[in-house]
Length: 416
Image (cartoon, rainbow, N blue to C red):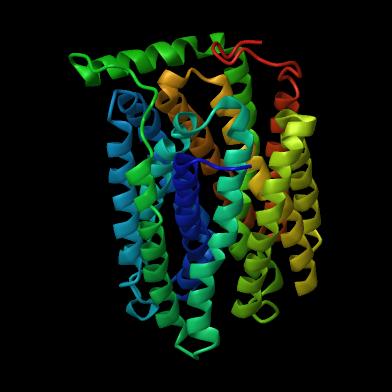
């Protein structure tokens, strides 16, 4: 499939911000956080992930509604991207030797807000840069190339430590700088080439009217039957997906122990996940055209249920590699197709507003999983049980998702 200039620039931003998701959220930050001597457990990071998600969930629909006005979407996108970039750079200046883990968490929460906030507007630009019939493939390419390209800055960070022999603490700190630079550079084409095509014309008292419009949409969202059912299902299953992404490092370390699972091996497993996720996300996009987007999302949910059950029984390092391959096979596909499925069933001129709801459902969901895993570990004293606690989220999500129609939905109204 030949991509347009706007589609290519949009995909490149996914390549940039995926470096943050890989290096900061999943890999480097959990390791650095665990290096502070006055931290009780790396599983405590789940509480702070939940805090960041709460803050983003609160502001998402409000910002999305405001950004639907003409020429506002890109301004909000740039603002939150800058917050993410500056905060990620700031992580590099808090060393484990300082003992100031609280400051590290402050910068991390700010970076998470910038990352998630920019994604509200980035995701909503999908309706501006491509057509309905191309959304699955374009969205899948964004995630696919995002996964594989994130290996580059992450690999550079690992090379500093394991090839050049740099001190681990300093190496990880430089890794934060590399991540921010990579993210920033690949944001430039998005800012330069992507334009807002669907919008609401400016009007007097935009803030007050935005709140009124938000209230009306929230009140009547049940009338958008397909949208409403999808968001309920999405709330559940994406919680499990996001939780596994954020908690895989603390979980694996807690279950197998730092002695059995050294840092190099653990980071190698994460690289395997990224590499496998690349072709699998593309495959999901191609299969969605043949078997439907709905069917492939169901396959992704079932894959995650199997992964959670398998994770409970891990007892050696090679089990983690197999588990990582299983997770990687579905991770990009389920995220990409969820985004494109939603993009087709919402009113395009109100894409930011509706993607604000998409984000609030996703972020409030992301509060539950990490918190439940951390709480389960605290209560049982055994991290293995924590992975079982998120299986109900996938099951409920699957049951609700099955209520969505097999037939083609009305794209303009979001109705059956």
